[in-house]
Amino acid sequence: MGGKPGDENSVYRLFWDRGSANMAPHAVLREIGCPFELVRVDGAKGENRNPAYLALNPHHRVPTLVDGRKVIYESAAIVLYLCENHPGAGLMPAIGAPSRHLFLQWLFYFTNTLQEELQHWWHADHYLDGEAARAELKAIAERRMGVMFGKIDAGLTAAGPYMLGQDFSAADIFLVMLCRWTRGMARPATSYPNLNRLIGLVTARPAWAAMMKAEGIDWNGPLA
Ligand SMILES: N[C@@H](CCC(=O)N[C@@H](CS)C(=O)NCC(=O)O)C(=O)O
Image (cartoon, rainbow, N blue to C red; front, side):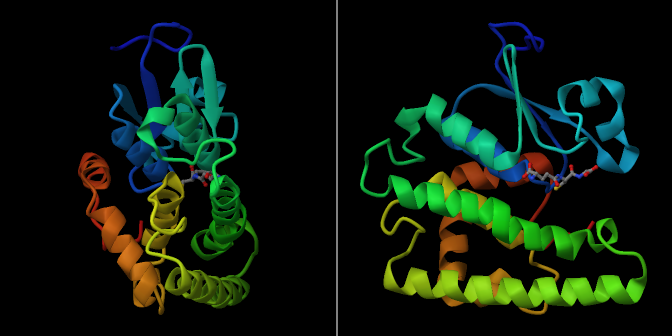
């Protein structure tokens, strides 16, 4: 363990910040059970804009995964990459498997639709000037997420308990990461019964619990 980026023999290094988009890749690494190192990038201290980090990820966001000479960012891409590298972990249906298309559908939906609304809610200041406009954007995002969660919950009634029915996958981990980010909303994801059941199943997994412990967070932690 302990190789540097660029060292072909190094283990995975996940650059992370507490409770951020690294949660899903982090939990996936723990599900896989492979060796990895965590490198904290404390956004509150501006460490995501340090030159060394910007050399890895010029977008100054977490997470970033370093795998030998390869550097990859975007949480859903990292999840997919890890699942592909470790097919034996069974976190993603194989190419040609009956539910492969649904895995891809949900992972992409979560990252480019639901996660985008969460960006509006958490970071309205990135989009608009003025408190009133930001409050309006947050309210619209929350309303739109309510519709999305309602549909996801209804789908889970018809075919749950996981997004792929009986089969747990990394898409569930990704969804539950996003669900935690709703904890400050009037109607958090936990208020949808089938979604809440899925959250319970995922958060009970040792890998999820270990990820939360390592990041020093709990489900209802402060909205920081
Ligand atoms: N689409 C990206 C979003 C990552 C993201 O927004 N990360 C936030 C923390 S959750 C961040 O690093 N923000 C710091 C910044 O934008 O400077 C992903 O899923 O990896």
